[in-house]
Length: 421
Image (tube, rainbow, N blue to C red):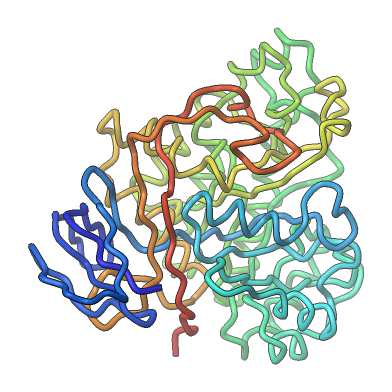
């Protein structure tokens, strides 16, 4: 896709570039950049970039897909369309499908689902067969097959298995992502005043912090780099900050909805806000925002999860956890944090593009001459209403349903990027 993008705001957190200019893309490569280019070529499509942002394509650390096993929720093609609509050019997909991505055949099938000019799938390989936490998969085989890293998308409850996992993967450069969560403790709302007020079953913060402490101690023993996913409590931020200060090779992420909502928004009992882990208290949310700003938390993940209308049209306490978000994360985060000037545009792009790529140990996209054109053109002022039609999806399990949102990805360019050497 050959394009001449004129007078666009160019963002690049890797080089700290934030300026207005022209960009010429030819044969999947950024061929030229400048204050004003003179391009005379009928094969080049001219794109008016005024009022828009051109930045590196966004990278989602982990999201969930219905295919295989639950195609009625969302197919892979629908997920990739949602990612493109939201400005994501690379999407990490969790392996907890039916069947799970726990074998060579499943990895090959996932990687084969590649379409021209669509976002690149980064498949996580399962740590345990069927992601049930009982038996380690053939990690070497999955590594050779081309997985992005190892993750079950479910908590590992066996400490000995975690120890073996970290030992066995010492020789592998792929990331390992772990979720600190004690399934023996249950609840639909983070414990606190709002849980009592709303009559929702409380889940104490220790359901996250106790297993997180154990994971950090295992990490201190092996020093094998790990990624800590779905961080949701203030105390967890403190623990990770202390671990990083000790020099432990840890990265961590928070999902976008945990930065935007807290238990105070649960008065409506909206099933779209039934998440796992549950939304934190206002103090948790404030600590998570501080944590992403000071680098304790490295990246924002979408953790996109589609459910059908019928699945979510039930009381809050029994609704399946999860919400869609690939189409919405960039515009809503921009509107919430950049428009209000709490974050710069470069900060948001670092949390959604540069740092997720680094957590995945893949090459970050960049806006530099001769670099692969892995880019998104984003119009922060485009107003649209969130409906099934505008989402191009039958499901609409999002807290932004039927609301007006400002910001939309107008186009993406996708070029294959290779893992870091």
